Length: 547
Image (cartoon, rainbow, N blue to C red; front, side, top):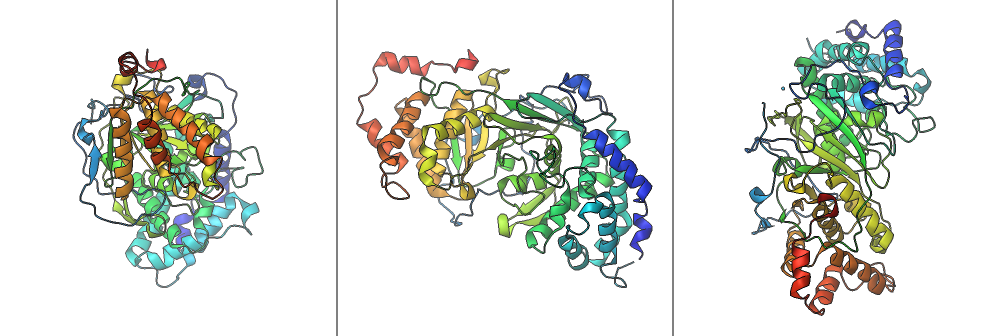
C-alpha cells in the first residue's frame, strides 16, 4: 500500500496554512479580560451560558463509582507485599466527595518501513530546520515491529488521515488566539474536548512554531510538539505511543462533546506558626489509586514546574502516567508557563481513555478505557486534578530548613484551598507520596505537610501509599497521636522547626540518627498538656480564610 496516497492531505500549501493558523492561535496577547481574549466555537452548555472564564471547584459527582481497573504508583517502586491491614483511619466512604451530578464518549508486507518515512517527511515539512536533528526511531519501531498487519492497515488507511483532517480544522475550531497562562496570572481557559483534540493532533505533527527549543520567547514553557516522543528505541516510548494512539483513535471515531477548564491560580500561604486549626480526617491505604478510589475528590498531580514533566519525552512516573491516560491534560503544556513557588494549575473535566499496568520501566498500555464519570452542568467530566510541583532535594537534610518547609506548605495550600467556597463544601484531597522518589523528599515529612495544608484549607485527606504498608501504619499512628492530643497546625509546624534546629543542623551524617516522627513523639510526650481553655479554643478554630 502506498502511504503517500493517504497522507497527500499534507501538501505544502495546506501545511503552510495550518502553520499560520497555529502561529495565530499561540500569539502572545495583552492581559485584557479573559472573556474578550478567548472566543472559541463551542456548543453552548446548559448552564452557565458562557463558560469562558472562572472555574468551579465544587463539581458534582455521582455517589456511585464508575468501574475502573487502572493502577497508579508512587514516585518510587516499592516492594509488593500483601499486608493483612489494607487501610487505617477514617473509612474512605466517610470522606466528603463532590455532590451528585445533574446530567449524564490489505497488510504492509511489501514495503516495510515505507509509511514511517512518509510520516517523517511530512512532519519535517513543518520544521525544516529540524530535519537533521529529529529522530523517528521509536515511531518507526511502533509502526513496523509492534503493530499487527491489520492494525498497521488501520493506521495508514484511517487513523492518520483522520488525524490530519482533525489538525487542519484548527482555523475552524479555534477562531481566536488562545491566551497564555503566564506566571503571576489568575485566569481560566475553557475549551471543548474537540478543540483540545485538534490541538493535540497538531502537537503530534509538530506544527507549533517556536516551540522546539528553549532558546526563544517560549523558553519558560513546556514542550508541546511530540518530536521527543518519536526518538530512540526505548520500550517506554512504544508504550506511550500505544496509549496516545488509543486516544486519537477514540476522538477521530467519535467526536467528544464535553468541555475542559484549565485554571492557573496563585495564593499566599497563611501564618503557619500562629495557626490553631486542628487536623482533619485521614483515610490512609496501601491499596488503590488516586484516579480510581479518589473519584469525586481533588486529585493531586505530583507535578513538575513544567506541567506534564516528561510526558512527551522519556518520563514515566506519576504525573506522566496521568497525562497519558487523560491526554487532554497534555494541551495545558501549550499555554502554561512554568509554575512559580506559590502557584498551581487546576484542570477540570478531562476524560480517561486508557488503562495501564506497571510503573516507570514496567509501564504498559492495557487497552482502552470507557470513562463513565458523569458530567457537570458545563458538560465537563466531574474529575478535578490539581498540579502542584514539589522541590527536588539532593541533600536529605535540606528539606527540613524553615524556608523549604514554608515553600512546600504554601505550595500544597495553594493547590488545596478555595477562598470562594465554604470549607464544609470542599471534597477531600486524594494524594500520596508527593515529591518523593527521584525528587528526594521524605515520605513521612511530605505526608505531614500535606495534612497540615489540607487542614488549613478545610479538607479531609485520602492518602495512598501505593503498596507501602509500613508508611501507612506510621502516618496513621502519627495522625492519631496528634489528633488525640489536639495538637494543632501551628504546634506541628513549630515541632518541625525544632527538629531542624536541634537535630538536623547538628547532624554530621547524611541522615539524622533521630527520625522526625520519633522526635515529635518525644517532644509532645514530654510537654505539659494544654489547659481546657486552650483545648476549647483550638477545637473550635476555623481557618482564617473560612471565617
